[in-house]
Image (cartoon, rainbow, N blue to C red):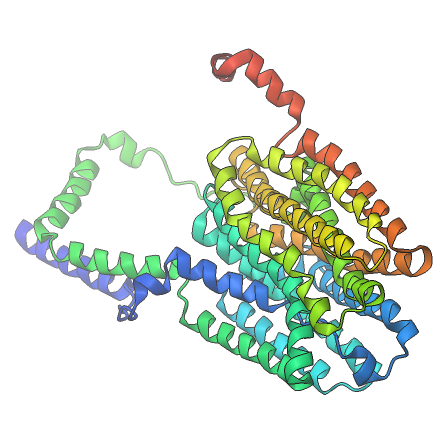
Length: 510
């Protein structure tokens, strides 16, 4: 009798298990390298690099703007891109979160939002390609900003999904390098290709890069999807080795517990059905993040970095043309001095991951370093060899400062989220707030892209190159003070911990 019951129970158990188990899928080819960290970082870096459009070197000839309006409309178009990037990132902030961050956190995969963003980027760039009126250029810049918001936000979320909170610094260094390099290489490639190969060749390169990026994104397998396949294969091999006797023992053990239980425990206490308490209403994740002073400081620092970077996009090509008489190739080549130092960002990122308080030193040192460098730009005022060399040297050191500050500020966002989750694991819900956090960063950078070109372009047009340079230096110096005091936590708290020592903290917590 007992043996028959065991067989029927086992049969029912196995049937139920097979019914609930989803059919296994074949493991994709090249799963290891398609889901590897270097490949994922490369794909995201390429996507972030691609969102930066080539500079509108043909604005004067193609649209027919007079020469006196070059600076003004170049600044306006660059600011318009930042304004739309900000609007696309910020539109749902007051209700739930940055819209693309919210969508990315709610979707199971980061694949389709990123691909859709790249397709939208190609469509918006085509408006610039065929545009012969100012209205088409404005429309193209608007949709470029919207598509860039999706690519940037989802790419950052995918990066943190892959590396986690403690190893993301080095990866942020590579991505920051690609983004910063893309900003600086836009005018370089646009000027050189346009002068040597023509107008449509500029956009042919852009479309080719977007196409390659879409292919790479389709080939890539997200880390969480790769773990599902690897876990499935492991569970199949393990399940085949499990005997039915073990299942019988578990079932009999449960039966014995029920049989041997006191009669009073089994009959005297009726079951009371208690309805679960309604879940506690949480604040939107973006609001929780914005309540953190460290998060606000990181967003402000990133906002200033964006202002400084985009200021050069707006004024540098026109300045070297007016001062040195350089053509479009020279206007592009001058950005090499700003581009090359950004390849140091992965090194700074690795240095920050290995040393506890290095992020504060890197970010504060970068902003302090920028003060004399930006102010000294006012000395470049004539067409001489010495001043040309001075300009390139100053730009190179400014690029070094950007490469120090960018990974430090980007990593601080991940560290803030990690601290909030450590104090309150359910603060962001089961889906987390990674994409929303980097959506907020996208808002900060977009706001800088809105203000930076207007700041630099309009001040240079009305008050000159020298006034523009010292105002940017003043902004960097003002930013360095709160960064040195608050990045990574209030510096006074760190000194207090050092004086008390780790043992005191442990005793108080116990």
